[in-house]
Image (tube, rainbow, N blue to C red; front, side, top):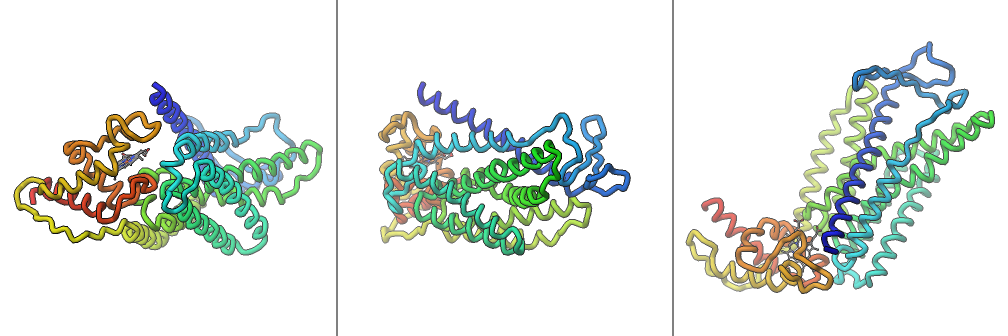
Length: 410
Ligand code: HEC
């Protein structure tokens, strides 16, 4: 019952997180596209910056943008902020429920650092705050300098954070920590910079003063960063379901490559929205960078060195007995303390993801997942908690190959 309740809380939070994220990112994409498509028209009211005509849902919309602000404040004003806040709050709640409550499985890798649970949590929280402060500092320093310098500085900051966390936390913990830092930067841009700036503009308008255009400029810079960070952050959030992305030795490099790929894709659409010819050239660096990411995940796989135990492979159309018994012995001793009907692992009430790895049948039925999680990546055992050695991973790999060969009728 408690287990079920926890799972329900998790799925409801996830539901909220994804929906709030859709609302936030959807509106942000919409406004970026709208902004870029604005056209000048001399008949527009004073202080306006451009107009757009759109058709949707059975009607026509005529939108006019005012820069810095209209001469008079309208009676009703819709703000866009709750989508961003709800995304962060639900995301942090998920982080706490899954990664912090289960820190020994999801954050800590005792071979890297044998943190106490509370230490890992404190480092993660302080890391999120420091990530924002450093980013904010770089932006403040670079407001007047070249935009490319700023981009490179942010890229270096994120890459070094990813590297640092990959040294401190488990693969999965490090990966999600970087995603959280980037997501937090995006929300903090809204909460600490964009909205307060716009509030100041509104206050000036109300008191009959001329608003300071500085606020608009800063908000625009941060809003642009959010625009470019969106795709990489979403990649990280869905990437934690793909062990070859988050749990290989150079997953931190993959994050940096994705940061560039995501920005290139956004750049393509940003130019397209202005009505100009889209920069099709971005396709080339994107293909190169994706190829590079695949290569990086390949070289970061566990190193499968075989020990010199000569297995006699019988060429009969079924799994060679020795391969099966070797792999089964390893899996039972290194996985089934958690993956069993009644796990021995403390506070674990049922097999994680309902994957049981006890009998020959369990193992054969789940061999594909076992392969993705423990042969071509370090995802399992979590934080290598039961010390799965590379020659043991190789043995499991052999079983996978034997079964695939039989399935392919080789
Ligand atoms: C200390 C406990 C523990 C050990 C030991 C362990 N696992 Fe897991 N395993 C988990 C947990 C927790 C999850 C759920 C992870 C999640 O929520 O994505 C999991 C998930 C999985 C999944 C399913 C992933 C999915 O999303 O479908 C596979 C496959 C898996 N483990 C294989 C293994 C293999 C193979 C081993 C041994 C080499 C192993 N595990 C050892 C705790 C463990």
